[in-house]
Image (cartoon, rainbow, N blue to C red; front, side):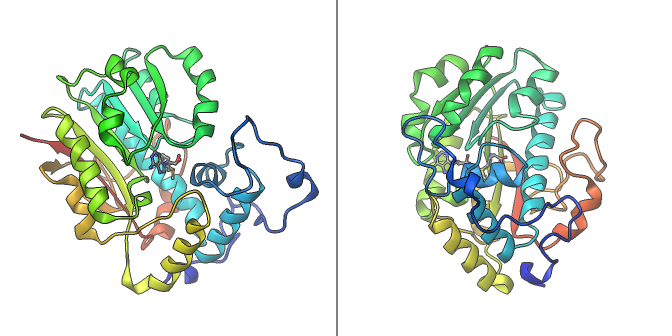
Length: 307
Ligand SMILES: C[S@@+](CC[C@H](N)C(=O)[O-])C[C@H]1O[C@@H](n2cnc3c(N)ncnc32)[C@H](O)[C@@H]1O
């Protein structure tokens, strides 16, 4: 079944009406800081809109509305993706003893940010956020004021060596101890597959044995190829293109890793602790909403680096 057939926009009781035409108040919106372009959609802000955030502008909401027309479940998908991230971080901190997190493509601040989840388990857990969207940096100051073990770096995933050499990162992370590398819903924004594989390998190789890779990625599914082409075309008009990849290609991002839980799985089925249950602390999406996400083209996985 194609995503287009999987439900009508607005059929989800959690979804509000579709944003469509720009309103007068949209046109009154001003850039939040000098140098922030709000005339073009940005993926960080489209995602923020799907999560119910406030850091988005008319151009972002318009792109989001177009995506919802093509893939009506994409808003729920954003929340299921976020659930994956939160569950993975909680497991890593609680069960695997991880105290260092390098979250690349961290996105705009939202509910249950990585540092909040990890530092609720150990206040000394270190979190380095990285994003290339300048708006993320704008919102970083408030975050940093309250969390000394957390830093936000404006940098690009496509330059992993440059990132690994950043003093702010080296000051926070000890590369002799395990680190969780979070690449959640970001690697598909590197359009060239050879480049994406090289970037992830460079980062993986920098981490000691016992570290983890947490990754979700859009899948190229031939049965919904037309839908995916339309979604890709919408992203091309944003600040970055997007490349869904085959399952085999995505599995290569975990080379040298032992997969944890039920391995590289469709987003609605991924589990790291056995049968899926709703957690009181993770209310971003209920497991009752997962069945409608069956077939959504996103794979999730957590792998432990073994050398
Ligand atoms: C869909 S959001 C995912 C946010 C978060 N990881 C999550 O899954 O909840 C993708 C994020 O990746 C960032 N991003 C995209 N391409 C990037 C790049 N080349 N370097 C750094 N960040 C990038 C975007 O700005 C955006 O904040």
